Length: 250
Image (cartoon, rainbow, N blue to C red; front, top):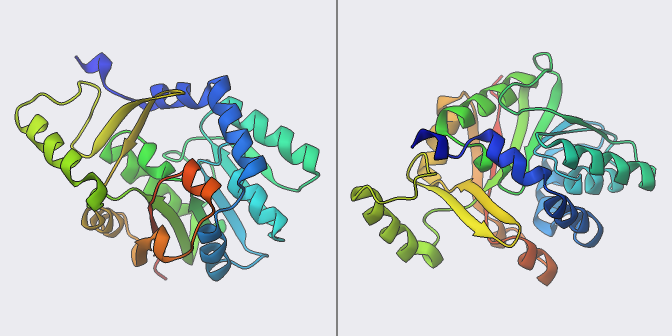
């Protein structure tokens, strides 16, 4: 049964797929930064801050920040094909943004190197397994300077829209009839037009506990819809989510 469980290689294979890369390339061209992202990032970070973006994909966020005048951006992405496409796009746009392949659970940077970090579009929750997500949170904390901010998003298991789904899912878990790919309650492994997609959906209390456990101070969290009114294209590309801002003590 264990070979059916979702793991990082299965997630990576999804994002290396040519159709998925193309989907994210179109998001760079047609969507760019969400209005909520622009609002939050400009509050948190200065244009001269050294920023690390995890789960950078084809560069939608880092490229959007560069176009706003941010000067020191490094995007790290697990999937090799995503990195290749991000590099192609910034070369075409003549932007100074660096991208490299890497794993958020094992960052190859020295301590306290960055002024802040980002993990957009619920990417942190696409790391399979609670312990692996904790490793990522600990690694990000390690490479961000004391006092530096970390901004990320998640879906919200308490969203009233999905109350029935999670009630039914709890019943399936209680009976041992959950999908065999899943690692823990809150996981989803769903078929999409682009292939099977993994994500963990936490409750706010769960996420606050994880931040505290890994040494972060949670400053605030709120639904995206309370921050900005997004364009129809953005809402079609991405469902409602919750923004989180945490800070490294010191």
